[in-house]
Image (cartoon, rainbow, N blue to C red; front, side):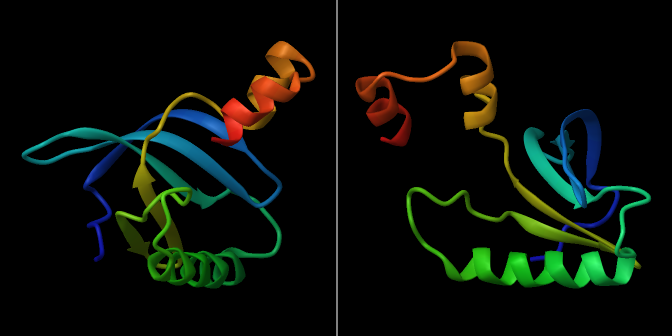
Length: 115
């Protein structure tokens, strides 16, 4: 499924990596909902074509996976030369956020997070 480029509105940057950034976005339409959009970080190296190819490959692999521990893919935004992956917004933050806020986790806390 391909989501039209204007079908979502970026609201807040939630993570910036070396090559990618993840945004909280709003998927417009009959049933608006929050989504996560992973796209190339502007100015990232390598260039747009290489990162786009990597995102297409990642999207294809995500589509092939069916597991409750893997966030499904809702679509891929193709706005050449850019590509973005759209997934449900789960909120809650990352494991890195949790560790930054709480420090190390006791064994029971670790089991709860992994569960």
